[in-house]
Image (cartoon, rainbow, N blue to C red):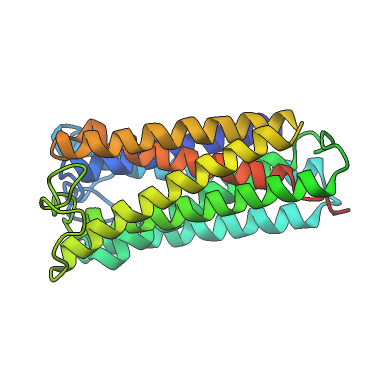
Length: 293
């Protein structure tokens, strides 16, 4: 029973990230000017931007209930695996800090550092839930002579997940500093391969593009290596999904610029980044040697 709930928490978290992206994209981040209430009540009129902002808050509040229950059920099913329980407690701690950051974001009128930290912690929580879900699944016994293939898959997952996380944090900075249209043309930036870098917004936007190329090249390279050199079905599926996802992510980035940061494109871009992170973490976790606890 606990694993379906863990999966629900994972999907719920992805939906929460999508909602948060929609809230920002439509300019509704301060539709509720107070916190934790919205216009002094927990049941405001759900219209316009208030609908999306308050729905985001309610969805996050539900996660504060769902995840601790999942942690307790996992503990009951695996009382001997204390490492899993510690991960669960860390996740609860992350959720509490996330709630505080969400409140500070509203109280201090969307400061860039806090808003970016809010998204970074959300991605970390998603990664943590992914680890727990995979570690409670079937044993990773589908490697040939274990070590060479296992090491390759683990490295591919870790490197990919790390790069996606870094790119997502930079993307959050681009978004919250209003640098999304600093380079309005594609594939060039202000008509040049390397744009004039005297403006901070152009620097940040260009960094996001360059890092995106790095993420795409590394992910595709590792995806090919995993599929070609291992016989682990789970790893091959994850690597294939990562390769397809990173190509789609690049196209979504182009579409976001062409559409002048239209909410559907930008929100899908954020959601796909979260999915790519989860795929990389899942691949690395599945290839990790199982500990006795």
